[in-house]
Image (cartoon, rainbow, N blue to C red; front, side):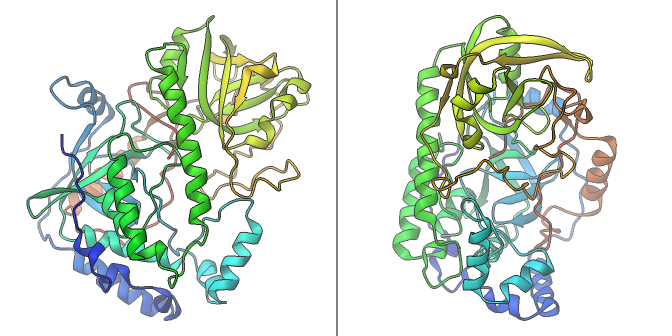
Length: 473
């Protein structure tokens, strides 16, 4: 199994490499000048003139591949590279969604004219206004986000195929249906881990919000230390980027420590379930009538005037696990309302009830005592001074029609929005046809589009239990 080594990436070492240059000037050139430079970068990457059809890699094949005893359960496969979307998202041929690259989190790129205009008012003002509106660390487009995108474009220049590997055999897809992977490329006779090199170049911190890397923790630590010592990218005080990485790292690492402690306690126990594992639904179904302990993050809280308060534990869009409270005082005593987005352990008996809206059996846990809930001690930066329970602003990736604050009075037994009647990840036939059509008309590497949108692929809702899935990282 290929392992990452502390390779010295040419992009990471050369401070004058195009991927490392500040792009503030580019943003001020206006749309036409910026577009010209973006098109030039795209043209430079189109190194292959041939065309080849990319056979779609369907879910049945994926499940068989992961179950193949002759193959490592961590190897997803080798795929043609189609598109670099930004510094931490790429798309490959043959898979139905983009990739979410593990252990990295690059800053955002500018996609909307409104964002560019706000930035043109001045960096300090732009950042200060964003921080004033945020209840936690900001996530906004920055020149360093553009730098990270160009670093990725340069890193993958001329690359036709990439090798995808998982961090854990039970964590394959994220909350928004994206594949959670490390991306390896073959260069100079070596197989190089892009995720590690992105950190080494200072384009991203070692992102541990959803847990430490099980396979490359030491490599990521070394890469981050090297980038920080050399003052690269986000560690360069002269560049325009987020200023609170020390606070972010402390928060992420505390979350990772909490996850690691639970996983150690859960080792060899069938009653301790990590909800991000793709087999968590089957394991919960097998435990109906028995007590379990679930580790998850709080995705949403639904108050109801006619039924119980429902806390949704994050699994995947439209298939979260419900924890219900018929006693409002017990719910408030747990402290869950102010812990949204953070980890929690819930202990209780798994029960099954018939959801008449979805016409199926659903699972849930009823909490009768506050002691059944154990909150993580982690507090998101900016939460310490929160004095109210206002709902968080919707994520840019959230479907506005799924308003988490609405009172779904009809789901008194804990049903999710009836619009989510099917909740598997199987793509529609139209999506598959579009992917196949795109694959046939362009060669891998010919469409590494620097202007592509990086919104997560919209979750689809057809029924299929054959595909592993995991809440988004």
